[in-house]
Image 1 (cartoon, rainbow, N blue to C red):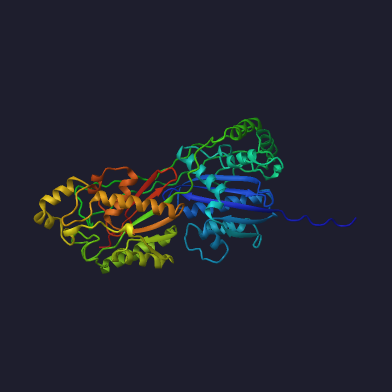
Image 2 (cartoon, rainbow, N blue to C red):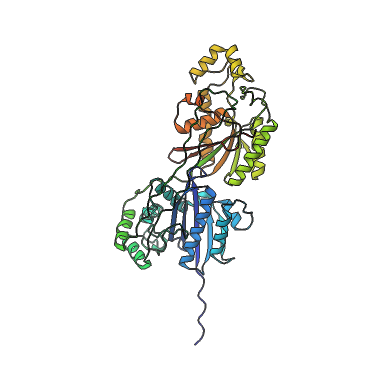
Length: 490
């Protein structure tokens, strides 16, 4: 008998994503294995990770997607599509992997398939919606103290609606199923398995899980909570009564979900298909602004008003050293994707030092400039009290009051920062951006995110070279993280 021809290798497309609400913050990943011809989803994977960085979550998504493909066929060829330029370039061998948290994950991902059997492609975030949505569903489930379930997925609802509206001649194979099993890395808990259902219906989903004999989903252990603190004294704009405020990022997934019988799977999958709009909203990855106050200037230790209308001082030697330390800290984190700075000299200099270490360019945004303190520029709080007592009292009493000589009120600063925030959120949706700015703009970002009243500006202290972060979500919500790791060197 003649030898049989070798079976052609199967091919899969893996789309993966990860996100962190705070970066680091409560995080999760999503991954889907697709048939490259039909676009059919063969396996979905998602998991809540606790508190990790965005890049770590992206690598965990890649690893889960590769493992899911290997379970379907360990001899397959895989084409990975991700919107993370960092992961794609590093796994393709064009960029070095320096971050200690990512090195072992990248090495593990490289071992799933033999060298040469996996290729990588960067795609825009808009083309990675399926994996992005799974990642957000996992984070939403973690926030509720639950494990992500494949039957909770809304990633296929849009596809199902499109199928119902498609012409009658459309083939069933172009539909994707939202009832495949979850796949999690070994040792972290999670289930695996499942085959595609040609019609995406509940009965087929039950048969699929019955044939696979699997369907277990468990929660991952939560990460440690993050520190929260708001600076120490040393601001350009003086403040009074400064209690520290903070909101530590937390996340606590609940106990594992027990395996379901095929009949239970049938019922739950049918609910997904039959109830358009069911499930959590598609929030998408947030725009995360890491807010960096510039390093010290000669005026900073003297606590003098230093706004947009003064001498525009440069950094002192201490300020430059602070900026270098911030640069090293952010380089270790490996999360910043862009740098935007106020047009003033001290912020552009700080941003330049950090951006050079990160290998990024600096964009200048006029809206990030400091408040104009009018005739108070260069004066201490005590000197203003002596020279302009009535104007100072009015300024402390009302956000609409302007500093002497036609400066900018805090109300006007708030309006400017709100407009700048909206502009930057639209420009950097789903990305982590370093904004190098000043005391009043950064406090205003935090105040607006918390919904705090204007007088809260006088209850915050913000050190030179300190960091804060605000994440903005598609529904208009925001989360705030406050920390102060690099500010004081003396």
